Image 1 (tube, one colour):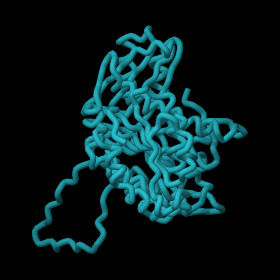
Image 2 (cartoon, rainbow, N blue to C red; image 1 turned 90 degrees about the vertical axis):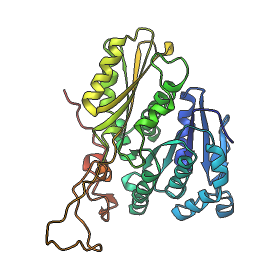
Image 3 (tube, rainbow, N blue to C red; image 1 turned 180 degrees about the horizontal axis):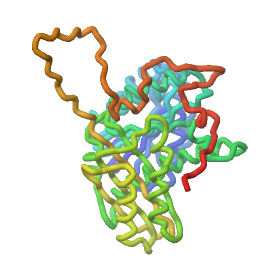
Image 4 (cartoon, rainbow, N blue to C red; image 1 turned 90 degrees about the horizontal axis):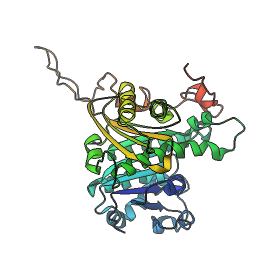
Length: 376
């Protein structure tokens, strides 16, 4: 199962496999694709894709029934096959859905094996809709903690935000198409930047320098513009991308990876203006890596993809005052919020509050899919 591709896109679990199957045709041919699941049915319709069924002894070809422990056992049972899959791959992009069993239980194990094999690991994880219930939401929240610790980069996609992107009477498929656009656009930008022939080239080691430490707060955004001023339109769309504005999303980072792609009319000035707009919004004071590509198929369209991260804030040692008592190790220590701790909010570790099946910790405008007016 080894591959010579510089990027391996992996779908894990039912939701992850479905999203990867939808966005894979949009990606450059250099991207290798693999689907991993306990349910054999989700692995039967994927041409030109590596398939790995895990947990055959545990689930006998069926799903995990939402049991995270079974998902973990299933992933661990195929450790040797997973190591072969990730051998020699510089960058692994893992897409999964949290809340169920295979993703919630197996994602951290899969990401950990990829990292152990030397791959920079970037994970995209979808969260359940608020109405899916307390159990799935709690299981998803717990999974975000373990998964973030195993990945170099971790981006959360809140399903509740998808409802705001379409009309209230639109088919559910249109809501998921929005997530495909954001995630697929970001992955396409990364993959295209590494493909041969880029105007301003980069390699996977450039992204590794941005995503240097597992658990670092991660930013992801994607935008597209067309017509006059397309570059700035794309930059503004990336700055307003819901991926960068969901609950707990990081809004300022130290390092940025910015990819700009456009048709033959794209100029150097336009590319750098787009990067400047992204830096103004998201930061990147420590380092900003720019990649650019002329793609004739885009015509008058310009795409901007952004990945960013910040190192965890260092903790300064506190000197004890003379004569002060030694700290009791069993006593909880109060700490101020850092950007990393804000990923799930200050109250991320407290029990969730459900009223009439609604998670009231989620803002009302998100739960009710109210589309806020755009800024003038």
